Amino acid sequence: MSFDPTSVSRRDALRITAAVGIAAVAGGHTAMEIIRRAGLHRVSVSKARLGTLVEIDVVHPDRDGAHEMIRGAFAEIDRLESILSRHRTDSALSMLNRAGEVIAPSHDLVTVLESALHIARMTDGAFDPTVLPLLEVHASSFSVSGRPPEPEVLRRTVQRVGHQNVVVSEERVALMRPDMGVTLDGIGKGYVVDRTVQALVRAGAERVLVDAGGDIASGGERSKEDPWRIGLQHPRTARLVGVVDLAGRSVATSGDYMRSFTEDRSHHHIIDPRTGVSPEETAGASIVAESAMEADALSTAALVLGPEKALLLLDGMAGVEGLLVTKDGEIHSTSGMP
Image (cartoon, rainbow, N blue to C red; front, side):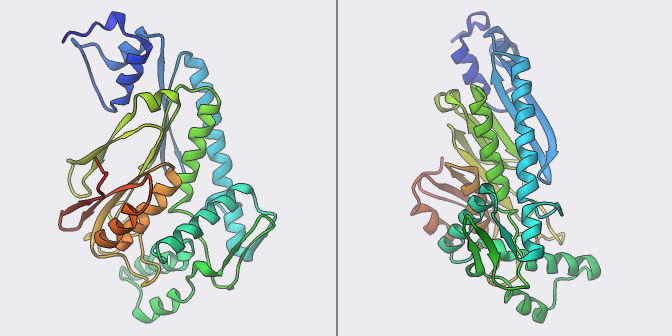
């Protein structure tokens, strides 16, 4: 079947942008050329934010308008990072960890913490925002000695972890033990991605994709009609283990390869809050969900739970699919995963 790039409709051009990574189509005409012929512009901007590289793609009839939308989106990311990042000493989260309490917390902090506590309860603590003391003791031990913490140190530190000891309301957020600490690393990035997509759609973007280091969300009416196509990479090789179409939905991936303390990846940044050590069975977990925040947290929980328990949890959740790859290369997925 022949394809005439000179007569492409705007709808067809938007569909072409859904196939992420396409280099050329139809007789050598590039996807970007076809988009231009349809009177559209695809603008992509990447910046270092949230401890990773954030890439924003917008398809819109006005190139300058698209750039203005993206500037506003990065301003929203900066605002949210000033609230939710534990790596910024002036953030609301850092204030909570220092003082143990924040009075009149922002809506964003309350929303993310409530969601984090909900998923902690749902996963029986496999995801727990109070895991920060364990992350810090592992990082310190490997930095000083190149070895994991001693068992007795881990035992004492695990006692400082417990989502049940966090109180969240519109009036007050408090840690009920003095030696606790909260990290939103496994859920906050997803929330920021969701809010960024929402801001771009409100600004008038027809088609949006936001990727923050593997936390990916899509939006805009055209994204629902013609989904973005996202490949899921094997955690040990360059091959794809799956492809998902994001029709206004989100996908997030967690893996032992992202930040590892050891070359064999037996000790890494994802730690089981209940035991104090990294899970042994799973190398990577990808979750598709309605929101990037939910996908973000569930990908961490799935990696901790392992394939059997994770799939049992995910198969019981509406609108959620998952794919896990074990350290020996076995692939496990929910019944509705493409």
